[in-house]
Length: 577
Figure 1 (cartoon, rainbow, N blue to C red):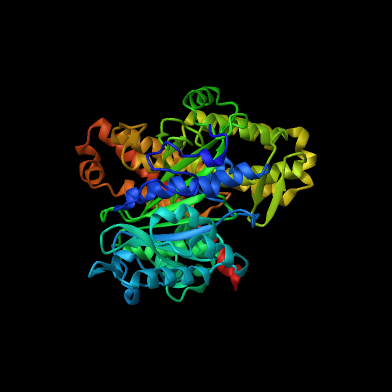
Figure 2 (figure 1 turned 30 degrees about the horizontal axis):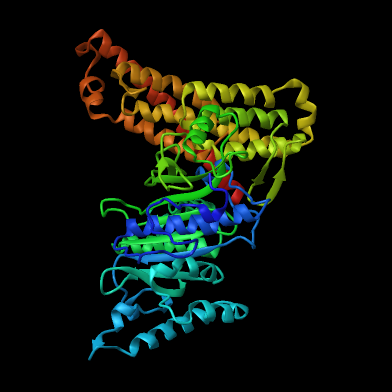
């Protein structure tokens, strides 16, 4: 545990001389090396320094690193924020697809002549100094000139010393290779292009959430598409800095660039890195680094972290956590179709050595989720949530707040509740049913009818979605990883559709569409149709006749559900008229 932020990453392999300088030149030639270097410098100055210097530093709650990401409510203007882009190539200033102020590496402009250094060296240093100075607040000009007046600010040796000034800029800084193949600070005040409107529309059309000229469908699905697209790159619908970084990353990845985009928001207090993946991957990689507090109930985790010296603050159980994510291609048939990201790996980073351990579960513990749910319904949860992206709710000391917390908790963890084990779901149901259907609370809930209905609808959606998810697995004739025979597949599908036929009194269009599509896939199974359905009963065994009967029941149930959908759509059209 570092006693001060200046002691952080002292043993990470970098040749530190003091807090802001090195005893040897920094020579970095690859993006992975650059990422390790930036991790050490930026975690130290942008996360640990404000944590040690501010008694009320707003730690990131573990759940905030779980998709789907929530909108930020506060902006901490006194905390650092930045954005950067790094290219594993030399820059071609005129040909680049974004605007920035270029800085020149001395390696690109100097040469020896008759034993004397070329006068271009001093000229380049002065030009770089002037370029940076013009983009920082005027009150810092004199101090900046005194610190850097005669040094080459483009080399990474001075990056830690220069970072406090970079953090005063509104826009991005740029790193790239020089002509010798080493990374250097290649530019400042960069503006990332943000073609938000065409990107949303192209993505929505490919996902079949939009249709050309269908304004109502666009209005209905726009926020879903916008949210999904942003989350693929690690963000919610948020600030211009993060939106433009996400869309710029998307553009660079499509172009086949070797790149890294990194952002620290003053609202989220999280360093987000988006970097190029192999060409086989549809999307670039996403990871986040933040200071989080380990739950006090995780006694074994705390013991291991303490023994390894991983705590930034032992008393408060604060660690540096890096979370890596996996992106998911949009699938309209998937009951969790809003799932753009899921957690792939969690790493706790040692604050002195920089090494990490990745076998601890800091943010995805199902036991903790149930404990939090219990705390909410009992009114014992202390913290805050953003309700429907518009209202900040503190603590759970009233019934109204408990319902709002519950709605937000169900929304946040919806896809996890849908996909987690039967045992976990049974615990969720036990807590929710005990609270929502408690006869003693009936009168209280009557005072918050609209809010109570919202919570019920979210709960109903999850109940139906879990059944559709089982149907989804039956389509592949698999239950709990085991292959099942056709007879069992059809029997279970019939049972599920019988339940869903009554459940869809509370109607969710996307679930009904998935239900219909999955059932039609089951019914159109070529082997099933050829082996059993297309044959006469006389030509079938007793087993085959049984399959044919279950098939007929499934067809009948599907017709009923289609009739419900058709009737509902007609009533909506009539209402629109």
